[in-house]
Image (cartoon, rainbow, N blue to C red; front, top):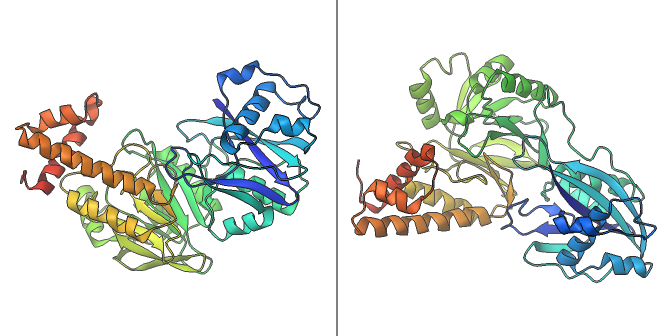
Length: 445
């Protein structure tokens, strides 16, 4: 497990927080505390200051280095000047087991006598300011802030007791042996990473749970890959009950065992008409037998979130029946497989179509949602990811067109564009090349 550190700077009842840049690979667009990875050279340092003696020297060194690099704040100088009232370890956050890369992150509360001059690093930080703990917590509760669980726990604790020296719990709490983790990175939108039969490098599909009290509590795309995952998901749903299931499209990693869940819980299953057709054509006419299926289309209200109607959006391209979801205020947009934060999206045959895919990307970008929620990987702030995917696809199209005009066949194009790709993924690469050729009018099969 890797190590990092985090600094919770406190002055009176205010906390210093940042919003991470949307282009960052880790937690783009999230409200966070400054900090970062422990480097090898941090191990060489030791500190003799009375406020630091009880803490590991390498962690303190990493803390000092990160604060100076990110904020231009010299913690050692502030200590020497007597500007630090106290330092305490609030707790150590551990990345959940489902993550591809895991970190151990001690969060140090640093109480300051005065607010220091701050010079945020614009490469990493989109916004930074001092905010009262209670105001920040209210912002999260209103669904207006994207935060990981440890940040939420710290903000909630300090909002109620600014003198707190310990946050417990600081991590999500669940029984790994019998349950799946349940995350609310946006208030009111639960995310359950369900182990699924998806394409690598992803290993799970996000089952999203949403719905205000008095409205249908909806679970999107539950798709456990085996009996163990199925049982864990059901036990998780005992804590977080649902009234209906919604399937975004017909690919297996978005609905496997979903009809069984619907039958077991006696709840309806919703999907587009095209998705129902493809499910029954691919998995048999009896696949949905005994399930109350309710069809959805563009503009339908699925439920409410934070008092706002959540509507269905038709997003063809990856699949001709794919539906996304978004509240009317576009605080977030669940885009299913339109993009993902882990690898590239395939435009499969025959249900995919490149022109429709690019149009769907542009449509969501134009709506300017505050957060993008993919089916695989964590949510991301703003539309930077969508914009990059669109630009990447257009560059691929230029490459394909150029190679076609040079007389290259599909295998030669794949070798040129996807050099070094795992052989198992070559059929998917060929599909994407053919889809670009179809859009360009160079391939009609």
